[in-house]
Image (cartoon, rainbow over all chains, first blue to last red; front, side, top):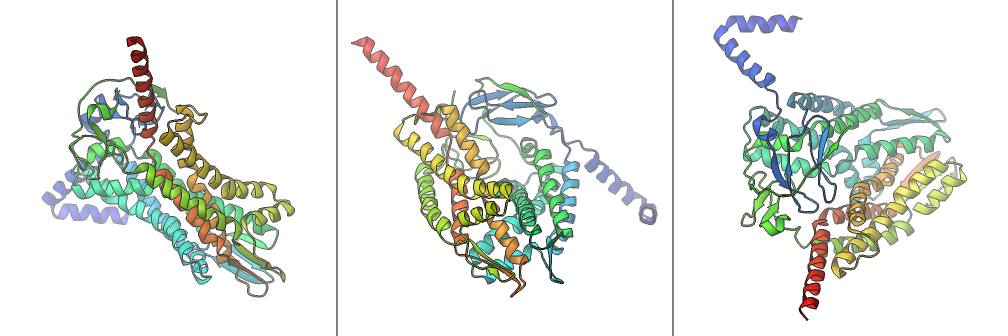
Length: 255
Length: 216
């Protein structure tokens, strides 16, 4: 409440500047990123897995366009707003910090407690003469999730401003590459299996870190569902594709 | 109609079709090629390297657990699974067996089948849709094999009680991590469009055979 009053005071103080700022922010936040007219038009594309030329009609809600020849999913109906994506990224970044600071599991044996963070596991591998494996775990479990979240921030910013610079587009390209190497889900399954393995041997307790990492994993899944690549690409730059029409499209209902 | 007939190359990152003369994608700036570069050779190299490393991954010890003065002898993947079965943890044994032994093996065999069928033109007993499905399963399932590496990292970080209990990761772990990473890279460098090109070619040959026969 106090913060809100303070903000109001600031705006009152410099009315002209406040109005300009307010208009700017409103324009940013009310802009519904349905992608503009470009995305609503039927267009043509090539299937990335079988190279068939396909024309895609305007998709209705819950519809998915799939390749008629190899059944690969090509495009979904875009229902997302960029604000949702921004909220998810910020939540993910907030969860990332405790997920890495707090222990994942705590083990108690004969009055002695030992807990380990994700980083602790990496260090243990390194000390036992397996620096390569330690690096692999570090990259896939710690580095890639962080990079994926951080890289989305300038991408979202550029798409809000509708100003796709070359930098933001190459950043999005790298982001899509990193998506193939995200392993949060697999790490969670690993935690689960280790916990069950240890239950018979000693007292095991789940630490705060494991809950935060689960949250992070769910955020990653939510981001991958929310993020609509085709629309984001259109928001990030001009589409200069070729225009040739032939082929059919199969429309599948999507739940 | 295929993109290759129209002189269109697809950018595999942002899925924009670019004309044949374009070296870099208009939109994302990445390199565009008609087909992935040296797809078959790269894929064979990575698959064979992974197949070679599959041997030390299964024969070298993954980790040794000493607990309250017992144990301490190093475990390979298979002996670890057998121990889990002996301790009545069948579900976990099944998960570890599938993720660490079965999936890498199936990935290697699957990649070999796909590559051989492209190179020789034989169907290998699989229809083209089955092959595409095989490729999708291989590229989706690949990362789940990392499970065992993550378990080792967790246990090694957690069980540090000195005399009472200690976990030491073994040399098999790096071979195994290499197998998983290499097979993932292999399925990434595979170009499924080659399968369709192959089919198109064989159809064309059949057609020309027919017309040739009629002419005689």
